[in-house]
Length: 256
Image (cartoon, rainbow, N blue to C red):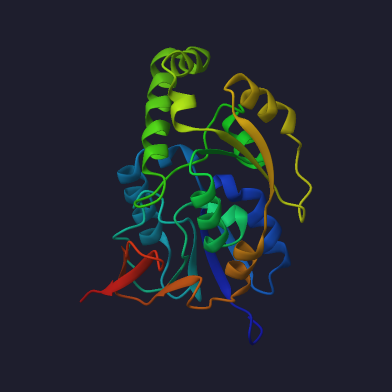
């Protein structure tokens, strides 16, 4: 490997697939990408177990760092440990931060519009419907959204998507918890246009529709090795990720 070029391993949720491959192509480093099924988000314990298994499967000495394309994600990454290779993790509550480009911007949006149901083209095409949720929630941010998401997915599993939508609307759940459908469009990448589908869902649920500009900044800096302490947590071998429940979002504890 030429001097200054690292071989990096990215383990990321599949909803970031387009962004990950795009940014990896622009990175000065060699990035191997492994995608994880987005459905595991609905069961944080299962997601944690799976991510632990994927970390343990990475061979020692092969990579300069293992990167996580995840936020805290309802504490799903809490307790994950760097063994032989350092981990680099964005300081993010969930993937909405990665879509918007910074935790600060997500915080501003959340405080101004807490009842937001988030949509992006890549998440929708992998979910198969504009009815799929993306507001995954995390400890301290969006707990009610995470609860709503679990209820909705349970209805989908039991009764099918159309019936799940009907039940949520009859119960008034959508209107009680949400007022806005936010569609994130990243200008740096040309993606399929799902605005019409999101507008239709918003109209049916009596939400206002808003389009927000996305940013690849956080993902690009993750894959290009610009890991400043303010935006990224670097976990040395022997360290385990912990939530901080403050603006830092995550830290690590050193284990024996």
